[in-house]
Length: 158
Image 1 (cartoon, rainbow, N blue to C red):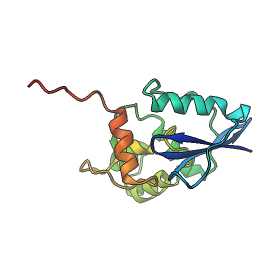
Image 2 (spheres, rainbow, N blue to C red; image 1 turned 120 degrees about the horizontal axis):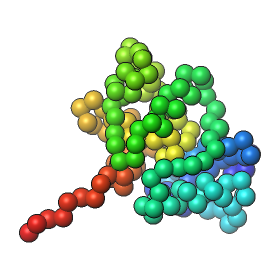
Image 3 (cartoon, rainbow, N blue to C red; image 1 turned 135 degrees about the vertical axis):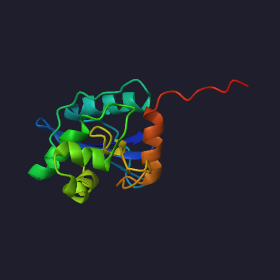
Image 4 (cartoon, helix red, strand yellow; image 1 turned 90 degrees about the vertical axis):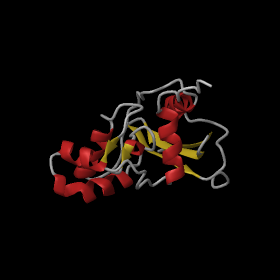
Protein backbone atom coordinates (compact mmCIF):
# COMPACT_ATOMS: atom_id res chain seq x y z
CA UNK A 1 0.00 0.00 0.00
CA UNK A 2 1.15 3.50 -0.87
CA UNK A 3 0.25 6.63 1.09
CA UNK A 4 0.28 10.30 0.17
CA UNK A 5 -0.68 13.43 2.13
CA UNK A 6 -1.95 16.47 0.22
CA UNK A 7 -3.20 19.87 1.26
CA UNK A 8 -6.91 20.61 0.76
CA UNK A 9 -9.18 23.51 1.74
CA UNK A 10 -10.43 21.35 4.63
CA UNK A 11 -7.16 20.08 6.03
CA UNK A 12 -4.57 17.47 5.19
CA UNK A 13 -5.97 14.70 3.01
CA UNK A 14 -4.50 11.21 3.33
CA UNK A 15 -4.87 8.82 0.40
CA UNK A 16 -3.96 5.13 0.67
CA UNK A 17 -4.11 2.64 -2.17
CA UNK A 18 -2.35 0.26 -4.50
CA UNK A 19 -2.90 -1.34 -7.90
CA UNK A 20 -6.16 -2.84 -6.56
CA UNK A 21 -7.63 0.60 -5.97
CA UNK A 22 -7.96 3.39 -3.42
CA UNK A 23 -8.69 2.03 0.07
CA UNK A 24 -8.71 5.16 2.22
CA UNK A 25 -9.23 8.87 1.73
CA UNK A 26 -9.45 10.78 4.99
CA UNK A 27 -8.91 14.29 6.30
CA UNK A 28 -7.17 15.63 9.36
CA UNK A 29 -6.38 19.06 10.69
CA UNK A 30 -3.39 20.98 9.37
CA UNK A 31 -0.31 20.16 11.43
CA UNK A 32 -1.36 16.55 11.95
CA UNK A 33 0.65 15.21 9.01
CA UNK A 34 3.16 16.73 6.64
CA UNK A 35 2.27 17.17 2.98
CA UNK A 36 4.10 14.60 0.85
CA UNK A 37 6.90 15.81 -1.37
CA UNK A 38 6.34 13.01 -3.91
CA UNK A 39 3.15 11.34 -5.09
CA UNK A 40 3.35 7.58 -5.70
CA UNK A 41 2.39 6.76 -9.31
CA UNK A 42 -0.54 4.58 -8.22
CA UNK A 43 -2.08 7.55 -6.33
CA UNK A 44 -1.47 10.32 -8.88
CA UNK A 45 -4.91 10.07 -10.49
CA UNK A 46 -6.64 10.25 -7.10
CA UNK A 47 -4.64 13.35 -6.18
CA UNK A 48 -5.43 14.95 -9.54
CA UNK A 49 -9.16 14.23 -9.29
CA UNK A 50 -9.44 15.46 -5.68
CA UNK A 51 -7.63 18.68 -6.60
CA UNK A 52 -9.99 19.15 -9.55
CA UNK A 53 -12.96 18.61 -7.20
CA UNK A 54 -11.72 21.28 -4.79
CA UNK A 55 -11.08 23.66 -7.71
CA UNK A 56 -14.71 23.20 -8.82
CA UNK A 57 -13.67 21.48 -12.06
CA UNK A 58 -14.91 17.96 -11.20
CA UNK A 59 -18.33 16.69 -10.14
CA UNK A 60 -17.75 12.94 -10.58
CA UNK A 61 -14.84 10.70 -9.71
CA UNK A 62 -13.47 7.97 -11.94
CA UNK A 63 -11.24 5.97 -9.62
CA UNK A 64 -10.79 2.30 -8.94
CA UNK A 65 -12.00 1.92 -5.35
CA UNK A 66 -11.11 -0.82 -2.88
CA UNK A 67 -12.65 0.07 0.51
CA UNK A 68 -12.47 -2.57 3.23
CA UNK A 69 -15.70 -3.30 5.11
CA UNK A 70 -18.43 -5.79 5.81
CA UNK A 71 -20.86 -6.86 3.11
CA UNK A 72 -23.50 -4.58 4.64
CA UNK A 73 -21.11 -1.60 4.77
CA UNK A 74 -20.12 -2.19 1.14
CA UNK A 75 -23.82 -2.17 0.16
CA UNK A 76 -24.40 1.11 2.05
CA UNK A 77 -21.29 2.74 0.56
CA UNK A 78 -22.31 1.67 -2.93
CA UNK A 79 -25.69 3.35 -2.41
CA UNK A 80 -23.89 6.60 -1.55
CA UNK A 81 -22.34 6.62 -5.02
CA UNK A 82 -25.85 7.01 -6.47
CA UNK A 83 -26.43 10.41 -4.80
CA UNK A 84 -25.79 13.02 -7.50
CA UNK A 85 -23.37 15.90 -7.05
CA UNK A 86 -25.18 18.90 -5.57
CA UNK A 87 -28.04 16.81 -4.17
CA UNK A 88 -28.78 15.44 -0.71
CA UNK A 89 -30.86 12.60 0.67
CA UNK A 90 -31.95 11.87 4.22
CA UNK A 91 -30.77 8.89 6.20
CA UNK A 92 -34.35 7.63 5.99
CA UNK A 93 -34.38 8.00 2.18
CA UNK A 94 -31.14 6.05 1.96
CA UNK A 95 -32.45 3.37 4.31
CA UNK A 96 -35.71 3.01 2.34
CA UNK A 97 -33.77 2.66 -0.90
CA UNK A 98 -31.73 -0.12 0.71
CA UNK A 99 -35.00 -1.87 1.57
CA UNK A 100 -35.27 -1.93 5.37
CA UNK A 101 -36.49 1.17 7.24
CA UNK A 102 -35.70 -0.52 10.55
CA UNK A 103 -32.00 -0.48 9.63
CA UNK A 104 -31.63 3.31 9.84
CA UNK A 105 -29.13 3.19 12.72
CA UNK A 106 -27.06 0.52 10.98
CA UNK A 107 -27.08 2.56 7.76
CA UNK A 108 -26.03 5.70 9.65
CA UNK A 109 -23.28 3.72 11.38
CA UNK A 110 -22.01 2.35 8.05
CA UNK A 111 -22.00 5.90 6.63
CA UNK A 112 -19.87 6.96 9.60
CA UNK A 113 -17.35 4.22 8.80
CA UNK A 114 -17.04 5.22 5.13
CA UNK A 115 -13.28 5.11 4.44
CA UNK A 116 -13.41 7.13 1.20
CA UNK A 117 -14.02 10.76 2.15
CA UNK A 118 -15.69 12.86 -0.59
CA UNK A 119 -15.32 10.20 -3.33
CA UNK A 120 -18.01 8.07 -1.64
CA UNK A 121 -20.19 11.05 -0.70
CA UNK A 122 -21.60 10.36 2.74
CA UNK A 123 -21.57 14.15 3.26
CA UNK A 124 -24.64 14.25 1.00
CA UNK A 125 -26.75 12.42 3.61
CA UNK A 126 -28.60 14.70 6.02
CA UNK A 127 -31.23 14.42 8.72
CA UNK A 128 -34.88 13.99 7.72
CA UNK A 129 -35.54 17.54 8.92
CA UNK A 130 -32.69 18.89 6.76
CA UNK A 131 -30.20 19.15 9.60
CA UNK A 132 -26.51 18.44 9.12
CA UNK A 133 -26.20 15.45 11.38
CA UNK A 134 -23.56 12.81 11.81
CA UNK A 135 -20.37 13.39 9.89
CA UNK A 136 -17.09 11.76 10.88
CA UNK A 137 -15.11 14.62 9.31
CA UNK A 138 -16.91 17.19 11.45
CA UNK A 139 -20.06 19.18 10.71
CA UNK A 140 -18.10 22.26 9.60
CA UNK A 141 -16.48 20.17 6.84
CA UNK A 142 -19.85 18.68 5.86
CA UNK A 143 -21.32 22.18 5.59
CA UNK A 144 -18.37 23.33 3.47
CA UNK A 145 -18.69 20.34 1.12
CA UNK A 146 -22.44 20.81 0.64
CA UNK A 147 -21.99 24.53 -0.03
CA UNK A 148 -19.13 23.74 -2.45
CA UNK A 149 -21.44 21.38 -4.36
CA UNK A 150 -24.56 23.53 -4.27
CA UNK A 151 -25.66 25.44 -7.36
CA UNK A 152 -24.38 29.00 -7.45
CA UNK A 153 -26.08 31.23 -4.94
CA UNK A 154 -28.40 33.77 -6.52
CA UNK A 155 -26.87 37.22 -6.74
CA UNK A 156 -28.64 40.02 -4.97
CA UNK A 157 -30.85 42.09 -7.24
CA UNK A 158 -30.13 45.27 -5.28
